[in-house]
Amino acid sequence: VVSVGGGHFIAYGAFGLYFDSQDAGKTWTRGMVLAEDFDRHISQVIPVGTSLLLVAESGTLARSDDGGATWTAITSPYQGSFFGALAARDGSVLVFGMRGNVYRTLDLGATWTKVETGTTTSLMSGRQLADGRVMLVGNAGLILESADNGQTFVLHWSKPGKGFAALV
Image (cartoon, rainbow, N blue to C red):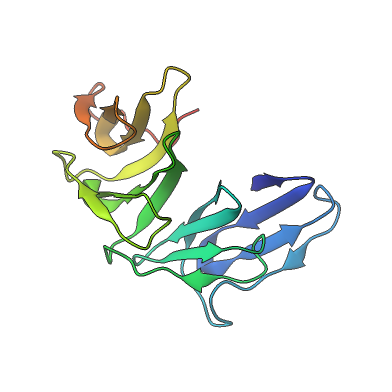
């Protein structure tokens, strides 16, 4: 579940599950993403300026400019699954997921740049810290650290086998 402000919440999940609440979660309406038969697992929905960005499996990326009422497909730079996204302070957006793939856009998905990570381990979560560093974490104890809003990353590992599902 993500809060997009003003009592507006979006809940999402497996097989295209998508619900919208305009009253702080008191009532929910089933929504549609891209098409009625959309069945991709939705990994994350994030606010980016006045838009919303959705990332999902099978390289699915979508954008909404009306608070999630309608969605437009974004041409994906990668056909594997995305597990997360984050909007960096410089206005860029990172999407990340399977096989250590990270892509960066400065124009909300019109163009993408692949960011080299030095790993093929899946990335599961990310955050920008108060000091400006971008951190991405993943399976097998993977930690990626960036001091330049996700343009480059330094690879770190925690103890072997101690993977991360989320970063807060």
